[in-house]
Length: 192
Image 1 (cartoon, rainbow, N blue to C red):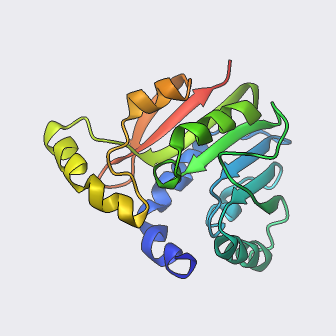
Image 2: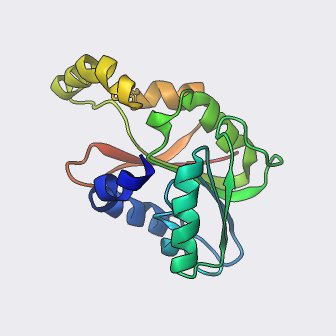
Image 3: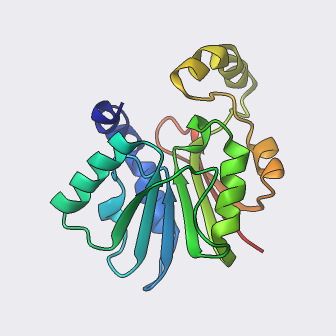
């Protein structure tokens, strides 16, 4: 999967990545956690004056990320292998916790979101960039129909955003559609 990720998802999802990082309002010295860092495709997008920790469960994805970080000479990103549903960080560690295109591919999206909230400092931001079930009834029907098939390739096509944020105890400040054809959501939350 790692070998094909950038080719398959790189260009199509890039505008959403750029939007998400730009809208984070990262300040000098901010500590950012990227959950599901994958091949490190975002590494060079972060400001150089913040500290980024990227985690991923996949060693092959992290290998590509390490190569990319070295090749692009990105010095403010450290990469760790870790389960997103069981983060090995203390409570309130990060100013910003970001999950790009990962919530619908993990076994327990709510557990991951709760961990993201736990490691985010009070007043910090939790940013989720992901596909969620459409509000359009025809599209939502289609997403439910294909869901039994997409689950076999590791993707939940019918993840319900209102139910997800309620179960994860997240409070969205904003929800914006990104990328073409506008089926991905950029969800920005703050931790109380």
